[in-house]
Length: 120
Picture 1: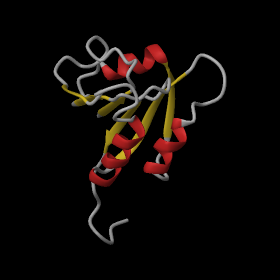
Picture 2: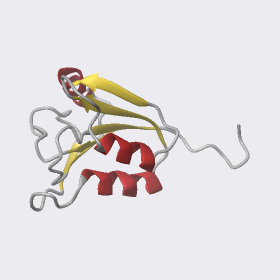
Picture 3: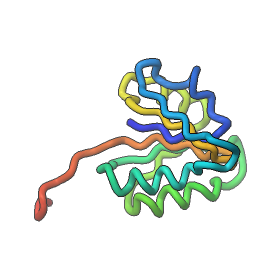
Picture 4: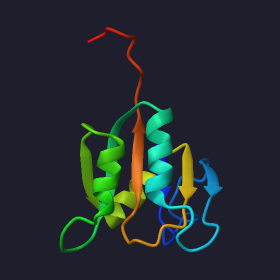
């Protein structure tokens, strides 16, 4: 799994300690979470997206950006503490901190496999 985290995410305490950490939060708003997700969508096969949901209210607008980058993938919505627990699991290999200022702009991307051309 790969975690793309917003600027507010506690990367040092809520990620698998063995995961590689990359800090792209050069300044507030740079580099954005949607930008990183879009680049990954072009580079990796993904099978599921897991997002952190707010306690109440509608889904954050950035969820649409995540789904646009990975059309057709399921979007698993979990509450904040459950999301942190998933990010602490041993299958998290990479955690990327972005400069994203929007709240709840965190996504766990489960990497899948590429099927050979013509396979069903």
